Length: 65
Image (tube, rainbow, N blue to C red; front, top):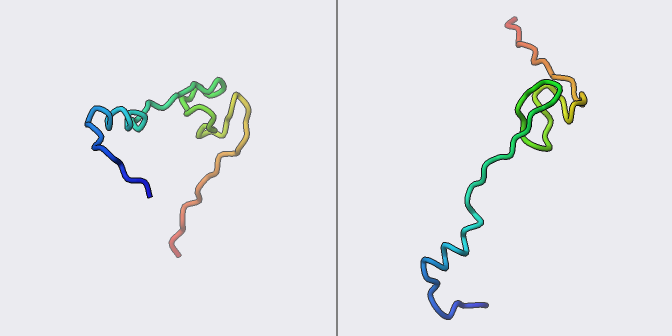
């Protein structure tokens, strides 16, 4: 089993973990609906790259009987 020989300094530790920071999400505008969506994801209306892929599902309200 590997055991570190010397303590890693706070500076080196920070350099080691520098890739773990949060990044901003890259957003795009859907050309058909004008909606702002995440890149490479289908919009709420079911559009992707200007083409309709999914029909929007309508939730039926539960009736009290």
